Image 1 (tube, rainbow, N blue to C red):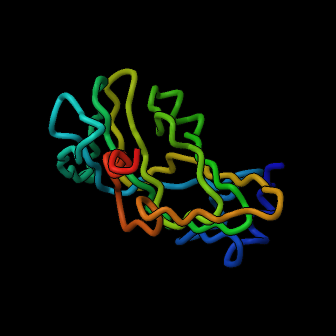
Image 2: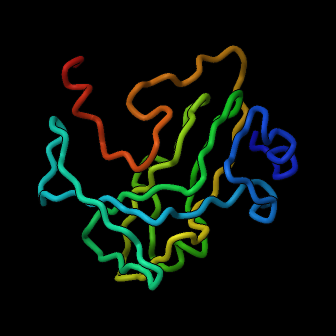
Length: 174
């Protein structure tokens, strides 16, 4: 089952942490998260999953930044989230999708126990200007049957900002 907005609110500060939390962003069954003012872009045209691909930081100025098709931009939420006992899920808001902006390629599924900022995998259909602070995504929560093992991966847990792919770390264990 998916938690209602009222249930999300009831669990804020306990099993669900959203910091900062603004009740006006609470929806009937989700909460709107906003875009931070920095992006990462990969430097190389060809990425190698066995290596730590170099990236550079772009700051979104007050007048906005234009996303270009054919490029992947990594962003992050302004909000730190932590979830115990529920599965967090992330989707783009419909108003964002109607501008041709996708907020994740495949990583909208969170793990129970995840704590950190959500890295967004932004790409667009046509050029579009974006702004820091825009409510870009919705987080919602599924229930999970008990017992469960909580997420403890060292790759992305307790992150402090945007995280590029760390898939390369898995090649030593394959």
